[in-house]
Length: 84
Image 1 (cartoon, rainbow, N blue to C red):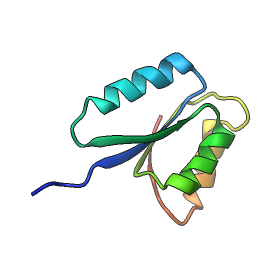
Image 2 (image 1 turned 45 degrees about the vertical axis):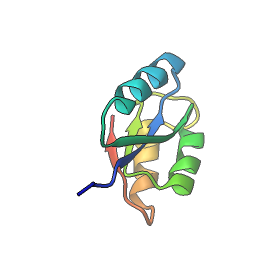
Image 3 (image 1 turned 90 degrees about the horizontal axis):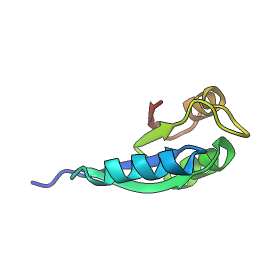
């Protein structure tokens, strides 16, 4: 029996960190990276569009902070787990 993969969205303003996190996650058999965002504003748009199961979220980013993104995703119809 095959279980569904965990769909992950990576939100981080550092290109190095994004690449590192994506590379690490893609090495896991039950994980699918469905997208990434360079700042909180773009990240929130992608959360709405992609509806990930898990979001990795940088604490300090331009535009929207991690705290703001967390508060906004808490009000969304689709609940995602957050990892900081």
